[in-house]
Image (cartoon, rainbow, N blue to C red; front, side, top):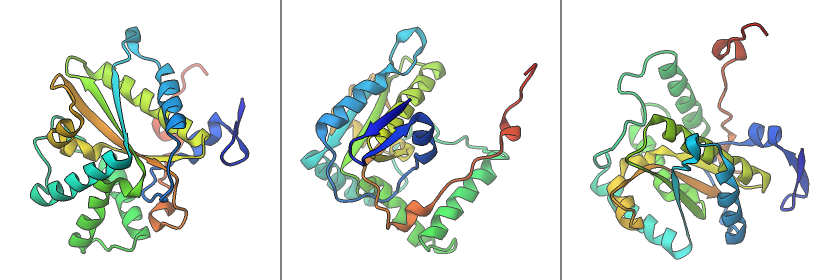
Length: 234
């Protein structure tokens, strides 16, 4: 099924939305229509969830509130550059192969595009800090889950967030899912007024991609089908 993208004047189907979704790390100073954002966040809730629990809780932040959050984070990344007490590991502590190599490769490719060599750790630190400014995006999204939930419900969050990202592409928008926000759960929880019974899973930057930002030249590779899939009786 093809869907007309009113913003771009083109038709987009699901396959194209998947193929063009990127973790964008440079956004234009261009607002996102709040009504469109609400529509996307609502539509995405058709994501499957076991027992129809719908375990996600979403905060969307923009305008003056986003400016205030960025000001808070500008101070926090100086006061606590390693973050706060994290409530889950973003990556396994002992990340084995082939996963460690994949992570290393995509990191080197990204820093290569922005022209920061591996030995310049201070420049890489400064560039990483752009995460906490949402790479200039005009909208931030935070996804929470009840602490009573387990791994199956966390997988439901991923399906919900993927729906959000694909619907954004349908509308001509881009995004960057950012688990780095799990480094500052107390700061974000206090800012949002999130109940202690909820755990911060991830953040996401949302906006219009800056085509001239060198970071957006990154096209992360995917392994071939034979490396991750097996077909039996087919």
